[in-house]
Image (cartoon, rainbow, N blue to C red; front, side, top):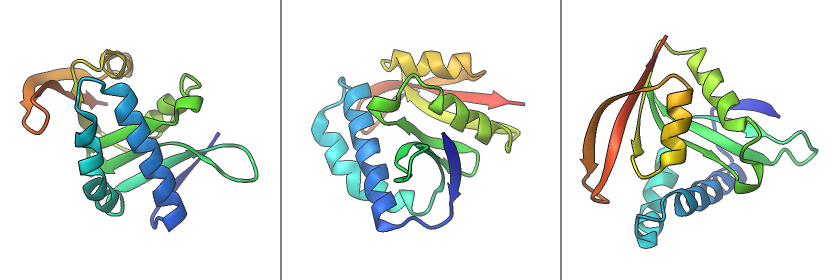
Amino acid sequence: MKTEHLTHLTPQQLDQLMSIWLSGNLTAHPFVHTGYWHEQAPFVRAALQEAEIIIGLADDPDDRILGFIGLQANYIAGLFIRKDAQHQGIGTALLTLVKNNHQCLRLNVYIANRQAVAFYHHSGFRVLNQTIDQATNQPEYTMQWQR
């Protein structure tokens, strides 16, 4: 896998990121009504174009996007890996790359997404607090990593 820091998203890249984002949310969050993710898609599409995006690319001629991490300053807005590319170290590689360039990182994660919570714990993140996401009424952790 190779990585690339995107400063400008092409329409094709944006479509790939949105597909990975929607599929990832529908799979990882069965406890959230599916309509919520579809309603959020236009807002996420706009936010992706403003965020710092680092992608993981397949080592093939097509440079397929396997996953991405989106940042807003020191906040990880999302880390998503294609379903057929999960458990291959791509998420860890993207997170490590971001950690190498930051002193402190924060994120929010639904508590019911146990796999993600475990991943972030394993990656050195610690729970700062627990709140309720007002949009979904789901409990979530705010987690932080510090160098």
